[in-house]
Amino acid sequence: MKLAFIVDPLEKLDPGHDSTVAMMEAAQKLGHEVFVTSVGDLAVINGQAWAKLAAVRLQPVSLVDGHWQVFQPWYEVSDSQWMDLTACQAVFMRKDPPVTVQYLYATFILELLAPTETMVINSPQGLREANEKMYTLQFAAVMPPTVVSLDKGLIRQFLEEQGAAVLKPLGGKAGEGILFLDPGDRNFNSLVEISTQQGREPVMVQRFLPAAKDGDKRIILLDGDPIGAVNRIPSGAEFRGNMAVGGRVAPTTITPREAEICALLKPKLQADGLYLVGIDVIGGYLTEVNVTSPTGIREIDRLEGVCLGEKVIYWLEKQF
Image 1 (tube, helix red, strand yellow):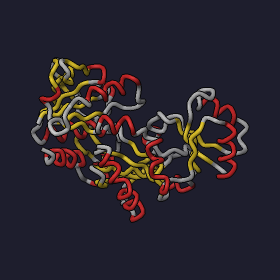
Image 2: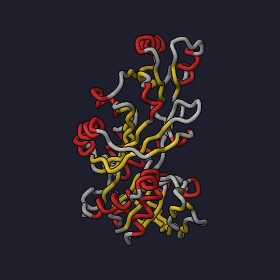
Image 3: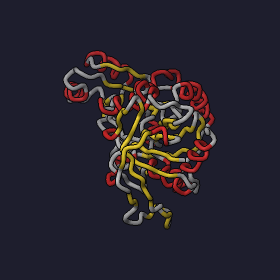
Image 4: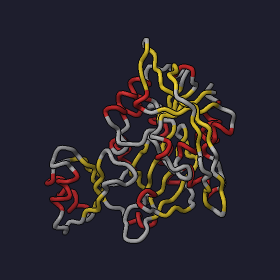
Protein backbone atom coordinates (compact mmCIF):
# COMPACT_ATOMS: atom_id res chain seq x y z
CA MET A 1 0.00 0.00 0.00
CA LYS A 2 0.93 3.64 -0.41
CA LEU A 3 0.35 5.54 2.84
CA ALA A 4 0.50 9.34 3.21
CA PHE A 5 1.07 10.98 6.60
CA ILE A 6 0.13 14.63 7.07
CA VAL A 7 2.54 15.76 9.76
CA ASP A 8 4.37 18.65 11.30
CA PRO A 9 7.94 19.11 9.97
CA LEU A 10 9.87 15.88 10.48
CA GLU A 11 12.75 17.69 12.16
CA LYS A 12 10.34 18.76 14.92
CA LEU A 13 9.18 15.21 15.68
CA ASP A 14 10.68 13.07 18.42
CA PRO A 15 11.14 9.54 17.01
CA GLY A 16 11.41 8.11 20.52
CA HIS A 17 8.06 9.58 21.53
CA ASP A 18 5.83 10.38 18.57
CA SER A 19 3.10 7.87 17.78
CA THR A 20 3.14 9.06 14.16
CA VAL A 21 6.74 7.93 13.72
CA ALA A 22 5.89 4.59 15.35
CA MET A 23 3.15 3.98 12.79
CA MET A 24 5.34 5.06 9.86
CA GLU A 25 8.06 2.68 11.05
CA ALA A 26 5.53 -0.16 11.31
CA ALA A 27 4.20 0.55 7.82
CA GLN A 28 7.74 0.54 6.41
CA LYS A 29 8.58 -2.71 8.23
CA LEU A 30 5.48 -4.38 6.80
CA GLY A 31 6.48 -3.46 3.25
CA HIS A 32 4.34 -0.42 2.54
CA GLU A 33 5.44 2.83 0.88
CA VAL A 34 5.44 5.79 3.27
CA PHE A 35 5.04 9.41 2.18
CA VAL A 36 4.86 12.64 4.18
CA THR A 37 3.22 15.97 3.51
CA SER A 38 1.80 18.94 5.43
CA VAL A 39 -1.55 20.71 5.66
CA GLY A 40 -0.06 23.53 3.58
CA ASP A 41 0.85 21.13 0.78
CA LEU A 42 -2.67 19.95 -0.05
CA ALA A 43 -4.54 21.15 -3.11
CA VAL A 44 -7.62 20.51 -5.25
CA ILE A 45 -6.89 19.88 -8.94
CA ASN A 46 -9.74 19.10 -11.32
CA GLY A 47 -11.98 18.31 -8.37
CA GLN A 48 -9.53 15.81 -6.86
CA ALA A 49 -7.47 15.97 -3.66
CA TRP A 50 -3.76 16.24 -4.36
CA ALA A 51 -0.72 16.63 -2.14
CA LYS A 52 2.95 17.43 -2.49
CA LEU A 53 4.32 14.10 -1.26
CA ALA A 54 7.84 13.11 -0.31
CA ALA A 55 8.82 9.48 0.09
CA VAL A 56 10.44 8.90 3.47
CA ARG A 57 12.82 6.20 4.64
CA LEU A 58 13.14 5.74 8.40
CA GLN A 59 15.92 4.42 10.60
CA PRO A 60 13.87 2.56 13.23
CA VAL A 61 14.50 3.23 16.91
CA SER A 62 15.88 0.43 19.06
CA LEU A 63 15.03 -0.44 22.65
CA VAL A 64 18.24 -0.41 24.71
CA ASP A 65 18.15 -0.83 28.51
CA GLY A 66 14.50 0.17 28.63
CA HIS A 67 14.91 3.34 26.55
CA TRP A 68 14.43 4.10 22.87
CA GLN A 69 17.75 4.68 21.15
CA VAL A 70 17.52 6.98 18.14
CA PHE A 71 20.05 6.65 15.32
CA GLN A 72 20.92 9.82 13.42
CA PRO A 73 19.90 10.72 10.85
CA TRP A 74 16.68 8.96 11.70
CA TYR A 75 14.96 9.75 8.38
CA GLU A 76 15.71 10.42 4.72
CA VAL A 77 13.23 12.12 2.40
CA SER A 78 13.09 12.32 -1.36
CA ASP A 79 12.24 15.43 -3.31
CA SER A 80 8.52 16.11 -3.02
CA GLN A 81 6.20 15.98 -6.00
CA TRP A 82 2.52 16.57 -6.57
CA MET A 83 0.48 13.38 -6.54
CA ASP A 84 -3.21 12.56 -6.72
CA LEU A 85 -4.07 11.23 -3.26
CA THR A 86 -6.28 8.57 -4.82
CA ALA A 87 -2.99 6.79 -5.54
CA CYS A 88 -2.75 6.18 -1.77
CA GLN A 89 -4.78 3.57 0.08
CA ALA A 90 -4.78 5.65 3.27
CA VAL A 91 -4.01 9.15 4.50
CA PHE A 92 -3.16 9.65 8.17
CA MET A 93 -4.09 13.16 9.34
CA ARG A 94 -1.55 13.62 12.16
CA LYS A 95 -1.04 17.37 12.38
CA ASP A 96 -0.75 18.44 16.01
CA PRO A 97 -3.24 20.95 17.46
CA PRO A 98 -4.22 23.73 17.52
CA VAL A 99 -6.93 23.22 14.92
CA THR A 100 -6.44 26.31 12.77
CA VAL A 101 -8.37 27.62 9.77
CA GLN A 102 -5.73 26.03 7.54
CA TYR A 103 -6.31 22.70 9.31
CA LEU A 104 -10.06 22.96 8.73
CA TYR A 105 -9.57 23.75 5.03
CA ALA A 106 -7.32 20.68 4.80
CA THR A 107 -10.16 18.49 6.11
CA PHE A 108 -12.44 19.82 3.36
CA ILE A 109 -9.85 18.86 0.75
CA LEU A 110 -9.47 15.39 2.27
CA GLU A 111 -13.23 14.93 2.21
CA LEU A 112 -13.03 14.73 -1.59
CA LEU A 113 -11.45 11.28 -1.20
CA ALA A 114 -13.81 8.32 -1.48
CA PRO A 115 -13.46 6.29 1.76
CA THR A 116 -13.79 3.01 -0.14
CA GLU A 117 -10.68 3.89 -2.19
CA THR A 118 -8.59 6.08 0.11
CA MET A 119 -9.26 5.87 3.84
CA VAL A 120 -8.56 9.03 5.88
CA ILE A 121 -7.57 8.39 9.49
CA ASN A 122 -9.30 10.05 11.17
CA SER A 123 -12.34 10.98 9.08
CA PRO A 124 -12.27 14.66 7.96
CA GLN A 125 -15.84 15.22 9.13
CA GLY A 126 -15.11 13.46 12.42
CA LEU A 127 -12.08 15.70 13.00
CA ARG A 128 -14.17 18.82 12.44
CA GLU A 129 -16.88 17.67 14.82
CA ALA A 130 -14.63 16.34 17.57
CA ASN A 131 -13.03 19.19 19.43
CA GLU A 132 -10.95 17.25 21.92
CA LYS A 133 -12.58 18.93 24.90
CA MET A 134 -16.14 19.53 23.69
CA TYR A 135 -16.62 16.10 22.07
CA THR A 136 -16.19 14.54 25.50
CA LEU A 137 -19.41 16.25 26.64
CA GLN A 138 -21.41 13.75 24.58
CA PHE A 139 -20.46 11.22 27.26
CA ALA A 140 -21.37 13.33 30.28
CA ALA A 141 -22.53 10.29 32.25
CA VAL A 142 -18.91 9.16 32.68
CA MET A 143 -17.34 12.62 33.03
CA PRO A 144 -16.61 14.59 36.20
CA PRO A 145 -18.91 17.60 36.79
CA THR A 146 -18.08 20.08 34.04
CA VAL A 147 -19.06 23.51 32.76
CA VAL A 148 -18.05 25.34 29.60
CA SER A 149 -18.32 29.11 29.75
CA LEU A 150 -16.49 32.41 29.47
CA ASP A 151 -18.51 33.99 32.28
CA LYS A 152 -16.48 34.60 35.43
CA GLY A 153 -19.53 34.55 37.64
CA LEU A 154 -20.67 31.15 36.40
CA ILE A 155 -17.15 29.73 36.69
CA ARG A 156 -16.82 31.15 40.20
CA GLN A 157 -20.14 29.58 41.25
CA PHE A 158 -19.10 26.20 39.85
CA LEU A 159 -15.71 26.41 41.58
CA GLU A 160 -17.26 27.17 44.97
CA GLU A 161 -19.70 24.28 44.56
CA GLN A 162 -16.94 21.81 43.67
CA GLY A 163 -14.28 23.06 46.09
CA ALA A 164 -11.48 22.86 43.51
CA ALA A 165 -11.44 22.68 39.74
CA VAL A 166 -9.25 22.43 36.67
CA LEU A 167 -9.56 24.97 33.84
CA LYS A 168 -8.76 23.86 30.28
CA PRO A 169 -8.50 25.95 27.11
CA LEU A 170 -10.71 24.34 24.46
CA GLY A 171 -7.99 24.33 21.80
CA GLY A 172 -4.98 23.27 23.86
CA LYS A 173 -2.83 20.16 23.74
CA ALA A 174 -0.31 18.33 25.91
CA GLY A 175 -1.52 20.07 29.06
CA GLU A 176 -0.88 23.56 27.69
CA GLY A 177 -2.71 26.28 29.60
CA ILE A 178 -4.40 23.94 32.08
CA LEU A 179 -4.81 25.64 35.46
CA PHE A 180 -5.71 24.47 38.95
CA LEU A 181 -8.42 26.71 40.44
CA ASP A 182 -8.78 27.23 44.17
CA PRO A 183 -11.77 29.21 45.54
CA GLY A 184 -9.43 31.17 47.80
CA ASP A 185 -6.97 32.20 45.08
CA ARG A 186 -6.95 35.98 44.81
CA ASN A 187 -5.71 35.62 41.23
CA PHE A 188 -8.97 33.92 40.18
CA ASN A 189 -10.31 36.84 38.13
CA SER A 190 -7.01 37.35 36.32
CA LEU A 191 -6.63 33.64 35.58
CA VAL A 192 -10.08 33.47 34.02
CA GLU A 193 -9.56 36.71 32.09
CA ILE A 194 -6.29 35.45 30.61
CA SER A 195 -7.69 31.99 29.81
CA THR A 196 -10.84 33.35 28.16
CA GLN A 197 -8.91 35.98 26.20
CA GLN A 198 -10.67 38.73 28.13
CA GLY A 199 -14.07 37.10 27.84
CA ARG A 200 -13.87 36.24 24.13
CA GLU A 201 -13.36 32.46 24.25
CA PRO A 202 -15.08 29.89 26.47
CA VAL A 203 -13.08 27.44 28.54
CA MET A 204 -13.84 24.06 30.08
CA VAL A 205 -13.83 23.80 33.87
CA GLN A 206 -13.99 20.39 35.53
CA ARG A 207 -14.14 19.31 39.15
CA PHE A 208 -10.62 18.54 40.34
CA LEU A 209 -10.17 14.81 40.82
CA PRO A 210 -7.82 13.99 43.73
CA ALA A 211 -7.11 10.67 42.01
CA ALA A 212 -5.02 12.68 39.53
CA LYS A 213 -2.08 12.26 41.91
CA ASP A 214 -2.18 8.54 41.12
CA GLY A 215 -2.11 9.14 37.39
CA ASP A 216 -3.90 10.30 34.25
CA LYS A 217 -4.38 7.16 32.16
CA ARG A 218 -4.09 7.32 28.37
CA ILE A 219 -5.95 4.52 26.60
CA ILE A 220 -5.44 4.00 22.86
CA LEU A 221 -8.56 2.92 20.96
CA LEU A 222 -8.47 1.39 17.48
CA ASP A 223 -11.85 1.28 15.75
CA GLY A 224 -13.42 1.75 19.18
CA ASP A 225 -11.56 -1.05 20.95
CA PRO A 226 -8.78 -0.51 23.53
CA ILE A 227 -5.40 -1.83 22.35
CA GLY A 228 -3.13 -0.44 25.08
CA ALA A 229 -2.79 1.97 27.97
CA VAL A 230 -0.17 3.92 29.88
CA ASN A 231 -0.41 5.77 33.19
CA ARG A 232 1.01 9.30 33.34
CA ILE A 233 1.87 10.32 36.88
CA PRO A 234 2.53 13.92 37.96
CA SER A 235 6.04 14.59 39.20
CA GLY A 236 7.18 17.13 41.81
CA ALA A 237 4.86 20.03 42.46
CA GLU A 238 3.19 19.74 39.02
CA PHE A 239 -0.46 18.63 39.17
CA ARG A 240 -0.63 17.72 35.47
CA GLY A 241 0.38 14.24 34.40
CA ASN A 242 0.98 15.01 30.72
CA MET A 243 4.25 13.66 29.37
CA ALA A 244 4.95 17.02 27.71
CA VAL A 245 5.15 18.69 31.15
CA GLY A 246 7.27 16.03 32.80
CA GLY A 247 4.74 13.41 33.82
CA ARG A 248 6.30 10.03 34.63
CA VAL A 249 4.94 7.05 32.70
CA ALA A 250 4.20 3.68 34.23
CA PRO A 251 2.67 0.42 33.00
CA THR A 252 -0.98 -0.13 33.77
CA THR A 253 -4.01 -2.26 32.99
CA ILE A 254 -7.48 -1.37 31.83
CA THR A 255 -10.00 -1.66 34.66
CA PRO A 256 -13.57 -2.94 34.25
CA ARG A 257 -14.81 0.65 34.68
CA GLU A 258 -12.48 1.86 31.92
CA ALA A 259 -13.59 -1.01 29.67
CA GLU A 260 -17.18 0.17 30.20
CA ILE A 261 -16.19 3.70 29.19
CA CYS A 262 -14.54 2.38 26.01
CA ALA A 263 -17.64 0.34 25.17
CA LEU A 264 -19.82 3.41 25.68
CA LEU A 265 -17.70 5.46 23.28
CA LYS A 266 -17.28 2.79 20.60
CA PRO A 267 -20.54 3.22 18.61
CA LYS A 268 -20.17 7.01 18.44
CA LEU A 269 -16.47 6.85 17.49
CA GLN A 270 -17.21 4.36 14.72
CA ALA A 271 -20.14 6.40 13.43
CA ASP A 272 -17.92 9.50 13.25
CA GLY A 273 -15.03 7.71 11.55
CA LEU A 274 -12.71 8.30 14.50
CA TYR A 275 -10.66 5.16 14.08
CA LEU A 276 -7.56 6.03 16.10
CA VAL A 277 -8.27 7.80 19.38
CA GLY A 278 -6.60 8.38 22.73
CA ILE A 279 -8.89 8.85 25.71
CA ASP A 280 -7.83 10.18 29.10
CA VAL A 281 -9.27 8.69 32.28
CA ILE A 282 -8.67 9.84 35.87
CA GLY A 283 -10.13 7.92 38.78
CA GLY A 284 -12.70 6.21 36.58
CA TYR A 285 -13.84 9.44 34.92
CA LEU A 286 -13.43 10.31 31.24
CA THR A 287 -11.74 13.71 30.93
CA GLU A 288 -10.78 14.01 27.25
CA VAL A 289 -11.12 12.31 23.85
CA ASN A 290 -8.03 13.01 21.73
CA VAL A 291 -8.51 12.56 17.98
CA THR A 292 -6.00 14.74 16.10
CA SER A 293 -2.63 13.14 16.90
CA PRO A 294 -3.02 11.10 20.10
CA THR A 295 0.25 10.02 21.62
CA GLY A 296 1.22 7.16 23.93
CA ILE A 297 2.11 4.40 21.47
CA ARG A 298 5.87 4.59 22.01
CA GLU A 299 5.48 4.54 25.80
CA ILE A 300 3.12 1.56 25.73
CA ASP A 301 5.42 -0.32 23.36
CA ARG A 302 8.41 0.34 25.60
CA LEU A 303 6.69 -0.64 28.84
CA GLU A 304 4.70 -3.62 27.56
CA GLY A 305 7.00 -5.06 24.89
CA VAL A 306 4.36 -4.72 22.16
CA CYS A 307 4.12 -2.90 18.82
CA LEU A 308 0.88 -0.97 18.57
CA GLY A 309 1.97 0.61 15.30
CA GLU A 310 1.89 -2.82 13.70
CA LYS A 311 -1.59 -3.43 15.14
CA VAL A 312 -2.77 -0.24 13.44
CA ILE A 313 -1.26 -1.19 10.08
CA TYR A 314 -2.55 -4.78 10.26
CA TRP A 315 -6.02 -3.38 10.95
CA LEU A 316 -5.67 -1.01 7.98
CA GLU A 317 -4.66 -3.86 5.68
CA LYS A 318 -7.91 -5.65 6.52
CA GLN A 319 -9.95 -2.67 5.33
CA PHE A 320 -8.97 -3.34 1.70
